[in-house]
Image 1 (cartoon, rainbow, N blue to C red):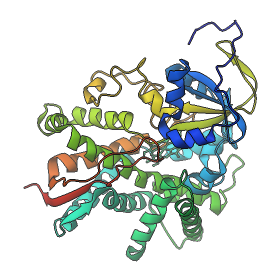
Image 2: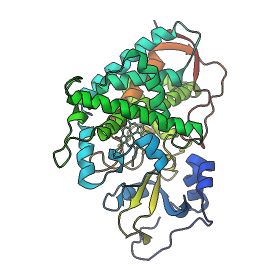
Image 3: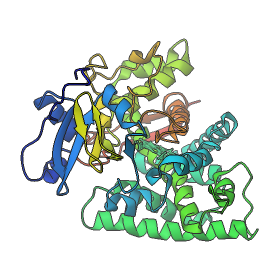
Image 4: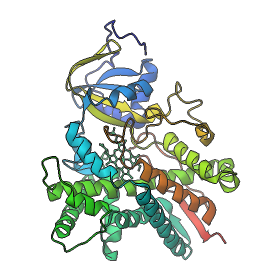
Length: 425
Ligand code: HEM
């Protein structure tokens, strides 16, 4: 992209009436394919009957996270609100209201709370391992969903009766598995959200009535008593949506853990480094970053142009839906050497950039919309990686470990089956 800011330029356009079907057919590759064929980091198209701008790359990410230029209110499609996001949550807020709500999220992300999360995660893995030793085989993705549901609820201070754990695990998973699905799979996501919102809403009320007393540093306590900018408590539905904004994505880390297991299986030499390298902590961190960069999760993030502006000579009109290519930016050859190579070493000496590695969004945590749970994700992945590498033996039988770049979210097709799971002596 040229740096000229003065010469007016026309945004390259994908011709045709509507490209929603192509988006559904090409999934994660819809934007990267056009960035390549149109030879541009920015193009205009039509999605869901409306004009939309798609963009990718580090420079585009920097623009996208400028909250003066883009807003989030009404940016998410209804099918995502009804399943993944819920109504009135932090994702759709702007300005001061967003900053204030985001601070509520970030207030539970202290080092102390992250250490507690690591301890809970480890306990849950240990308990699961004992159970797995008793059976012939396990489906790792599903087992880890339950581990993480238990972990999330305990960490967030949400009490769950033992007999409800499996149903809650299924419901929380349906919320992130269903947004792009069609038919019954999608409707099960909507049903799951309604059920869980009702239940968590009741728990919030019980906290306020003093019938449930979660520890003060937990999400349940903090969110139940959070005051908005006018000094009012959140209504119980909104507070429930925000507590679910902690529980659901922690369970979704199961997708990354399935991919972690896949990477360990496919890249034996990387596993060896993790087992016997000199700086295990650093090697684990690099491995986790590479899993998050390499494998698909969210294809893009969405925002609306706040008011007309010009950037590099291109005009962005108020209200235009704009998608930032997350997957493609993580695989951008102008930023990553050999992006299609799984190579954790690329993160040796990596200084970090708020706009280069963006599987969980870019920019700033506080002022912007970058994922509130990125540190949580990294810690849970590292704790889980330690179990997969150092604390258990298992066999990986023949199965379909391929994954799609079309279905969203992508999950290895077999969901990763392990046999003969045993604790390492
Ligand atoms: C499982 C791996 C995860 C991935 C791939 C992921 C990805 C993302 C992405 C792409 C965004 C949107 C960025 C944007 O709108 O520009 C986001 C936002 C968010 N995520 Fe995550 N996330 C993950 C885990 C988590 C976890 C574990 C939590 C909480 C414990 C969490 C809480 C949030 C919240 C609250 C937001 C909204 C932030 C805002 O709008 O200001 N996420 N995440």
